[in-house]
Structure formats: C-alpha cells, structure tokens
Image: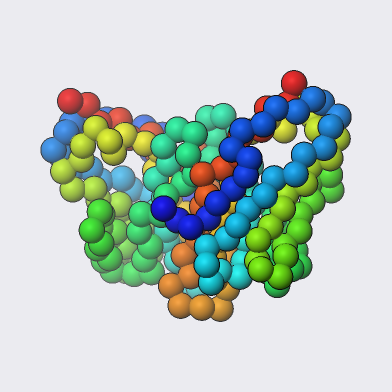
Length: 114
Length: 111
C-alpha cells in the first residue's frame, strides 16, 4: 500500500460532460501529480501541484485542470469530455524538498467516455 | 528531459534471474534512475531508485555504471507473479514533472 488513495475507481461519462477525480496523497507528502494512461501505453504526465499551485504541466489542453487543497489532497477536472479521454487516471504523491522523495502512485480511476 | 530506451518484451522462467537494461544517454547530473512495476489495471509500484554504482533492496538490485548512461534492473529468482510491465525513468528525485514514462518492458514469466 502506497497511502495514495483515489476515487472513484471506475466511472462512465458521456461525451461533452465534465468529470472530477479525487486523490488523497500519502501522509506527509506536499506534492501531487496526475497522469493519464491509455490502454497499452505508459503514463503521460498531465500536471503537478505544489503548495496549492500548478508548477509543471505536460502536453494537455486547458480543459484539463486541477486543484490542490491545504491538506495536500487534489482534484483533477476534465471538461467537455471526448472519447479519447477514456483512460486510467493516476495520481502520485511525493515530498518536495525532503529526503527520500520517491514518487508513489495510487491505483487509479478508470474513466470511460461513451 | 532524459529519454529512456528499454526492450519491449522479455520472457523468463520461474526461478531464473532476470536483468532488464535501460539506456539513458542524456541523463543529467541531478537525475536519479527509478524503476516501477505495473500490473494490469493498477498504478505503478515503486521498485528501486539509485544514482550511481549499485543499490539493493528486498526485491531487486539496480546496477549503474560510472558513466550513468545505462542501468540494469536485476530481479532474482522470478516467479509467475513478477509478470508485469517494468518502467525505467530518469529525473530529479521527487519531481514528477521531470519524469517521462516510455513504453516499458513487458516481462512474462513462464512456468
């Protein structure tokens, strides 16, 4: 167990809808990042949050947005869902500025867009 | 961002030692090398991380030559449950924005 929890584990949405995915980071971790993993591919970095601000972003459009809360938990929001957004969404947490700052992943949220 | 190259797939038999090599010719001075294991429909699981020479933990060893342009993950005496995709990543430790996943290596352990 990594201590990183995500919800929901599975969900189905219709094209054009909006979705919010949630993540609780490992205790003591102040940095959260999100990844998208399509079937048969490696995870792709979406963005990272540190101290409630986005401090790094991958090649994803603005309809992918996020939040980090004072307790370091995080949300990933995707607007105007497209069929290609169907994927496993992974949250990872780490400790920026601390020793042993390995990145740990949650089990992911499976999103299916129909 | 440093790019990594790994074999797409490998087969092994139960009880054998498996070595998966990763090339990272453009590794930067501040970059660490980290290996993850991923089973279908699960998040990547941290295996081992190193900067240079050799690192060993309870599940694997990581060998890094002096030039750090490659690394080798060694799994001793694999079992069927070690069948998974293994990813090699390089980047600054703790900074997800520095990590780029490649396609990984699909390891299949046969009985």
